[in-house]
Length: 59
Ligand SMILES: [Zn+2]
Image 1 (spheres, helix red, strand yellow):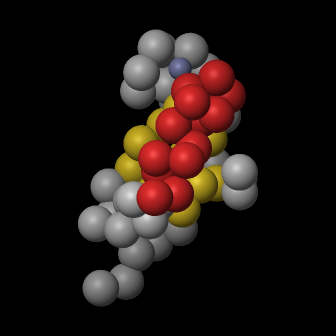
Image 2: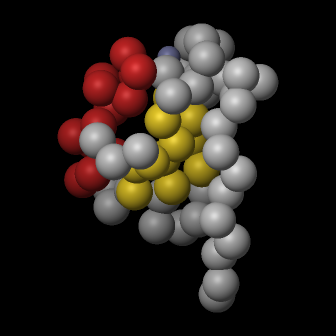
């Protein structure tokens, strides 16, 4: 399966947890995407890495 590169985050992208402006995109091995603000990217970073997610920008 070929996955296309996702578009850069914009001001319209919102954290999936709190609705703040998204700063980090997490792509799970299954291909689904989650968006996080800086706060929630930090909060979930270890769990995302444990799940094999790729964070962009790298965290
Ligand atoms: Zn958030």
